[in-house]
Image (cartoon, rainbow, N blue to C red; front, side):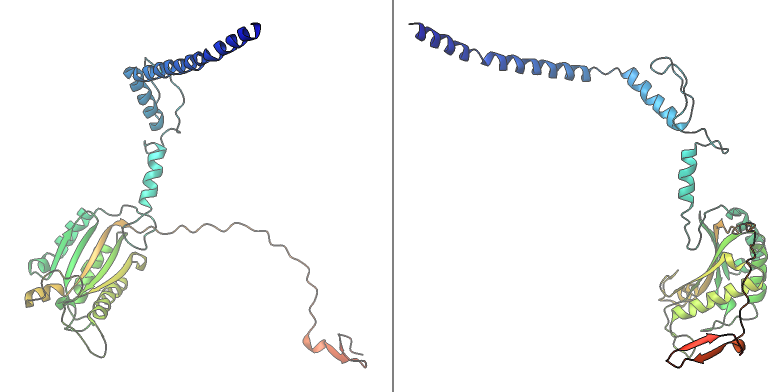
Length: 305
């Protein structure tokens, strides 16, 4: 009888163990809903104050406020540089300016404003522009002076005619005082050329651009600012179906960049104290004797006996 009673109690205890797991589960559910409720109840004013404080800190401004951020503190970033801009913005600007829009330009620095150069060129070359022999156009990056090839060269030739010197002299007088980069670009029509000098229109356009570049250097324009480009027949300005269009495509364009050439700074050599070391006198080759040994081999000596 006692044994049966014990088995009855043991079975009753095993049936009640599910209550423990159920209580743990309900506790976790309650904790989950408490967390979700706390996340849903966001104080928008404090959230806005935190965002404003982070913005002020990253911009280097003093932290001010009457709510969450009430006292001033040091900025996360150093104070602004001499230009009044945050150092982070200056670093980004310096990195962006290192990428110049033209080849061979390591640092992008603003040169003479293109608007001022445009006014000078239009005044100096007004007769040729009125006659339709040159065309001046300007955008944000370049000031392009399109020169009619017939004004500079004979047909199929890269040798300059008599009209080229006065034109390039006037052009170089405006280019010499400034430091803007200059690109000389040659263009032709699509009429194939085959002679003993030029094998293609590309070669002809390159030779003409190089001739204009050489003339600018001869007039005193610094060669470090210059480069020439050849486009041949592959970048036409007008249709090659008509004679007027082909004539417009035969031109040399002197393109002035808004960026300027900066002369490299040569660092001064550091003073080095030269040390004089006593060197042993080197014997003359005539004072060296090579003696064959009886058992084989040789011996070198400076003795004369």
